[in-house]
Length: 175
Image (cartoon, rainbow, N blue to C red; front, side, top):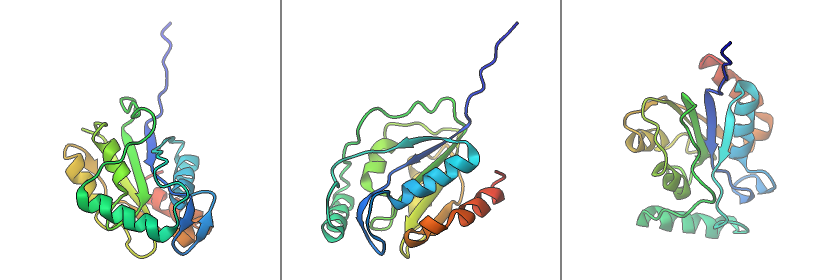
């Protein structure tokens, strides 16, 4: 008798910033984490949170100034731990806030350490007016052999009451 292991086919990779955030003030759980949790609850996807303590405790204005400087210099801040093993996943949701027109630079650090060739990649963002910004193009550039979908964007100030919007988006993707 052969025993089969059923592996999860989806994972949500995300970076989220708690603390001082634009429009929503000082929050204990970051906006993107809330959306990532909705996605996992609805789809059963596993999660990998990109963690860095570089931005801990920073007020909003110094944080965005640092983010702009990192983006302009192409700086790749380190993240904690090891990159996830993505071999058992066929769909990868990638989410983060929009900082200066794209994901935070720490996400690009992780992108250099993972391979998404042949996988379906679905970007999502939290923002206060930027929508998906350049994330779809940036993900396509980082992973040219992945099947990158259009993605989803939600206002940060809407995430705490926006589960229905996430459900509608995921339903449109077949979940």
